[in-house]
Image (cartoon, rainbow, N blue to C red; front, top):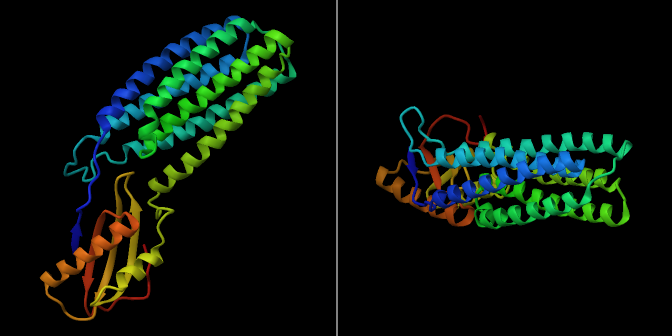
Length: 304
């Protein structure tokens, strides 16, 4: 059996960890200020923003712990190390986005049925604080969010919270100048719907990785066709493709050869397979079981 890995990615976890710590501290400050301000002003949208900020703090802590764990080396009883830690963090954070959204919808409906007068000046100033602090955190995490699911989950928490603060600011201004107090509940509802919209996609993607599903960008049949074109290969079957984390996509398969080739010849074929699947499909871990004249089904491409 051949198992090669020639393609590695660079680790930027040190910088991710530092940026997460800064974001955690900023969000703790915002949360405390908004809880106090929400209770004094009576603003549900401000309290809902504080609740979301508190979920941000928890999600950022989860992301930070996952980042630390992902740097741990593999061992005999953890042969993959903690490479899945960041995917689990993304799953937990996406789930929390949706849970928070459901709580906010319930609160918004209750407040909509029973609107209350709100101290709008305090709402305006605290929402500005939220916009500035979350905006800075969003900029810190934006780069890593493009390539890391864990960082994307933290980034989405902060981005949606910054947008929530913008909504709260608009609501505060409308309440101050037009006394439209029902807008507080309406904005809370809008924030909640947006949280569900953003969280669902991340939840779906992290679930796919945890369930060892084939990445959406890869078609098994195309890979089978690509490998089958290599000279001396008769058949490709029993294929498994999964994503371990953002950096690693694994392929394992049984390959039936036309002739009883030497081990050195198999190594040359394996090298070709690695290059083909890496450059065409970004698969960087290949595990091949060579066969010749073995009595198993050669027609089953995918099987447990």
